[in-house]
Image: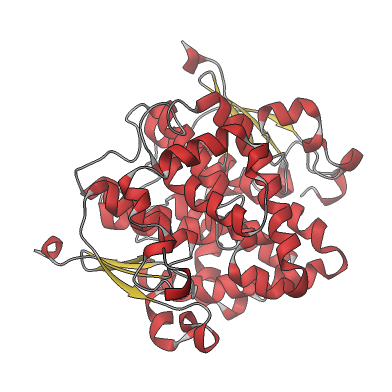
Length: 216
Length: 216
């Protein structure tokens, strides 16, 4: 059976979209193999013809699972939600489910793409200010939404896809010097989630392709 | 019952994300009211305090439905898929469903956000070249994927959320002078879909807020 072959995540330790997928697999308790794709080395291994065959967008992650190859992290997460048991990543209630998707997409469509590596490379010298501006703007919108929806986690008291999107985006925010203290709900949720095993074990600081000098 | 109140789409005739939602409602046969939010006039009506209460991201659309307010077009589309009967917007088969989401997200996260109005306003004078670059790059990735997945529509022979994302993105591509003839699958799908009532009736050229001079 296809499911007996371990899924392969082609990703990069620091890519927030790769991290999302690692968290989801960890929450579900799905074993996976990883193939590192170094986005910087040799001008970017995502630009090789071989990788382009896996993901024509030349971005990470790409996931080989059940005989198909999927890119786009939220498509991967919702595929494993549909096909695997284990921790539920989307609530059953349609309104809460819609809130989880709204928060996930606010991050995955509204913030992350604008501060993605391929955009920053096009921006050039001003890239830190650019990323800072759009993450700051996104967090100013996200904070009041989370203030309404959050319990212990982004939407009430169950860890969901929204949390999977939030933590890697806060990691990016810190890289680009956004002061997360301005956003008490985001800050609290992030601190709580970082203590959860599935988030800790998949953290960019301790992946197999994390450079030794920043490995913790 | 909440469902007896018509949903309200706060949107803009030319916004591709607003158009996605209009198409989805039309495919489902759901009647809706529209409140135009002019993204240009008075410096942008999305920036008013009143609108910010509906969508803190200060973007369109925002949809009031069943007593909640949702932003993020794909969250809205998947909410009506979950709560309404009518044309199915996502296939039942998990792998095809994942392909629909992958294509939808490639557009909704990979292309559209980078050529969104608020990004282009930050780019300034070079905005047409910027938008052209990222749509061209996105379509170069989308074309080989659609070549694999498409039948009559983006994923085999049923109109899905992927088609709902594709047509408004092609509309944007044409605005930014991308030569769609380079992408035969995208071109064919777009031409086929534009003949479908739900796409025709919701087209930016014939909305209640379409300026008279460009109304067809």
